[in-house]
Image (cartoon, rainbow, N blue to C red; front, side):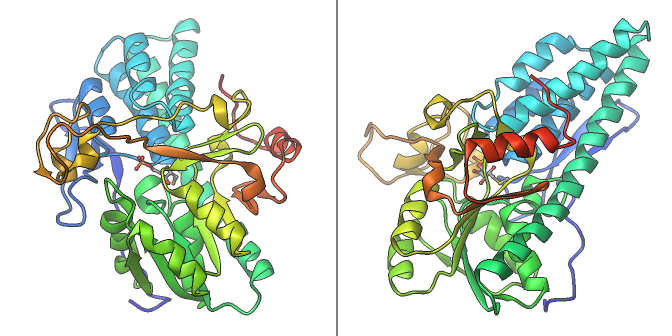
Length: 374
Ligand code: MRU
């Protein structure tokens, strides 16, 4: 599809109210790109499972899902305090999950304190989840515009070859995403020569999801194994790296999908801009630095077996095709930490920080209109 012709927006997450009661409907990302199948969550444990198996994933979308999860608990008469705890703890690294959950829960409790009935408090919770959803969509648009302006400044003339890792498009957001949204904006402006898509082992969010999004938007893209990035930089074929973030600590350290840090080291060595794109809601000033970020450790079986992602349960209980001797121990962190000195710029919905410093981040958050939830 050429630039200028846009595919229909993906329905990634929606609230529905069939006669049996309210539900949260997710596009099951474990099934992509083979089939577009919806997953209907009727209760909080089902949503927690969807989060842990990555049926719904990516930092901003986890925040939105968490917010609707609280609204679902309230609407279905479940224990909202318990639901809040379950949702917040479903995955530890993406700060947006706790943000969304706490933000909606706070509105619910405030409504009860004001003397509203349970139904009205549930209605207030749903309204807040919807606001969060809309805010994230708007933030996507602003990040895309700021990001394209930064690319034009760093790489005048266009014809960019951009490298991205994991998935950071419409599948992680209420809008068109974070890092991927910038590449998409460049495509629409006729400035993108090629999007290099890291496959992103072990769960292949790049191959399955980013390639899917690039294809449906008609972008010029090529898939590479994560290990091929080094030779691509050495050949001079990467003009900039664009990644998202799951948590940005107060000193500017960035947690993102494992494999992001090696790309930052490569970019520094080859004098290529390394750009992080994330909404202000991903900044966590209460986490001092990268060492203080909890990195999710996932089942080693995601590494020792080729398992269709939809068959992976949170404890790795589903079996796949063995690619290592049975019982091989594996190291499988879901994220890594990139220190601020390796990051050229952080693009947010509120503007760009470059160089990346704690002071710059604090100032950005201070002038942000985002609600701070601790
Ligand atoms: O484990 P995932 O698939 O949830 O990891 C997602 C990422 O690491 C994304 O790059 C990140 O959430 C930023 S994009 C919004």
